[in-house]
Length: 144
Image (cartoon, rainbow, N blue to C red; front, side):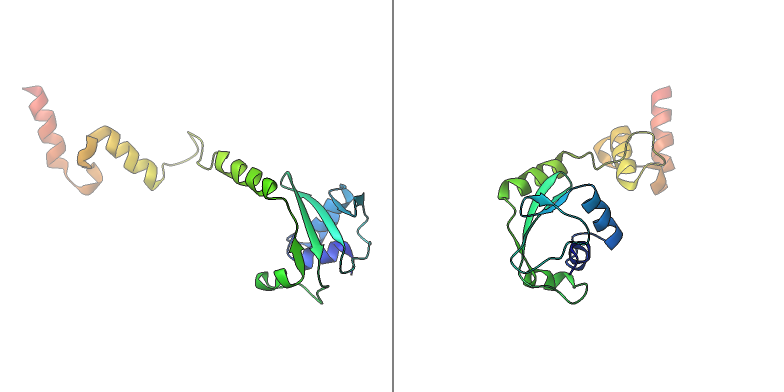
């Protein structure tokens, strides 16, 4: 089986064309050498893949007939990637700014709760709850 098709079948890449593009960019190799998309994969080959700034190494156990379900992938490949690489990946994911930047659209529900807590304190009283009497009583107390 061709290496681009194999990487697609074992769900390393979402499409076969993405797999072929990554191979063209020399991010995939067998036995320490970069390969072309037409390279045939055999059981026992160790494939080195550079993806998301991580160096994965997988050993081909069996050649699948077609694209596999996610649960069947471990029957066809063996993961030889260093634990250090996965630690690096975990660290990068935790460092990412997963929250939206300030000024990007309307506030989310979480933003709204934080704004209400800041404005009204820990009482969690907001004007959306229909408690306008509370709001006006605060204003009247300040006028006196």
